[in-house]
Amino acid sequence: MMQTETPPISAQGSGRKAIYAVFDVGKTNKKVILFDETRQVVEERQEVFPEITDEDGFPCDDVDRLTGWVLDSWEALRNDPNYALKGVNFTAYGASFVHLGADGKPVLPLYNYLKPFPEALAYQFYDTLTENRDDFAALTCSPRLGMLNSGLQLYWLKYARPEQYRHIRTSLHLPQYLSYLITGETFSDYTSVGCHTALWDFGQDRYHDWVIREGIDEKLAPLTRDSIASVVDGIMIGVGLHDSSSALVPYLLQSDEPFMLLSTGTWCINLNPFNQLTVDGKALSADMLRRDCLSYMSPKGQATKASRVFFGREHDYQVERIAKQFNVSPDFYKAISKPEPVTTGVPFEPACMAGTGPFPEQDARPWDISGFATAADAYQALMAGLMAILKTSIDLISTDESLFYVDGGFARNGVFMQLLRQLYPAKRVQMLEVPQATALGALMHLEQGEAHKQTRLLFT
Image (cartoon, rainbow, N blue to C red):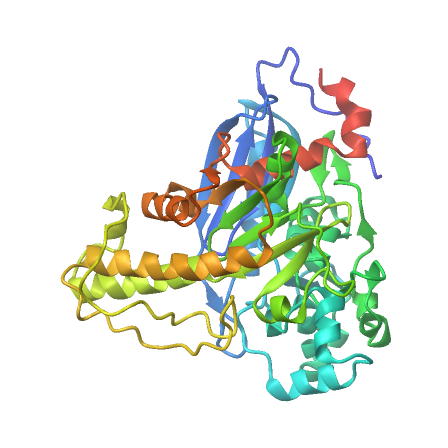
């Protein structure tokens, strides 16, 4: 653990409030959440960056602007006259690499995980494996998801962009890149490596053979189980966590009974850390994998069953269509507080879910919304259809847990929450009373690090 020689900041006698900061980077919103020493939210700062395009014209996050925002926020926090910064951690969406060159700066775009993966290259990849595709998916807990299998992004670069690939010194998953910006330390962590990357052999508890055979491991930073990457000027800097795994941490620490967590946002990711059932010795059956079930890893490398629905993306796409059709405000749905039956229009058909979720074979279809009487009616039909798909996904990994926690944006959606209770009348459905569970999980993880234990007295 690297320690700088600059004396650590102490809040005692300074008149400044001791805080922790968590950078919570989503596909849409980029936030810095400040917590006090009792884990209460003190302040939230939010930015929304417009997407740019990569060299193929496909939308992606602006890594340069993201980098500047993190560094500017870091400097502002450590020099804020009102705060004494004790620690910083990071949580971000997964399936995204930042590729660093010899000078330690990004040499490629932050490619979007929705970018199409070349079919010919996919055949080439799977044909070189020593096991069949179903066995490979079971071993790596990674359904075939193209760029969402972030390990295949490196394979794609090696064969489709060989010149650019040669310039990559280290590839960091996004949460670890954010940490690197402050510490200069490069690490991989289990939560990012274990999220459907096709990199990790869950049976052997190591990288899969293909990673070594292709030399991909040479581009990856060392794995760490510690939560702290470095201490900079007396401020603890975390390694960072995949957002879905981070969201699970507060619930595991505060619940004394089996539960499932529904982490909602662009994806609705259902996490069940208590389902230890196996099928033929494997955590996931071939059918579960085909239907978008997978396994995440905890920061210590323990498996957690999960299932996914492209819920928020589909919701936002259809809400935009409804708003245009009925000439209403794009946020019209926020005034709808409870589910209502709809007798007009046609049942919902998804446009953004092809190849994903519990019905991967369902093609994208242009859902006809012209037959609804109002925007509210169309929204009710949308939510009823989305919730039916979500229920199928949940049931794939549900066991006998009696409690559902809901985290993320849809926890504040009255229609979502009431429909969920109607679909599962025997289960308790609730939010954790502490806000910002994903950021809170990153804070709790930081507190478990070795440097936090060693430096605790410096901050009292």
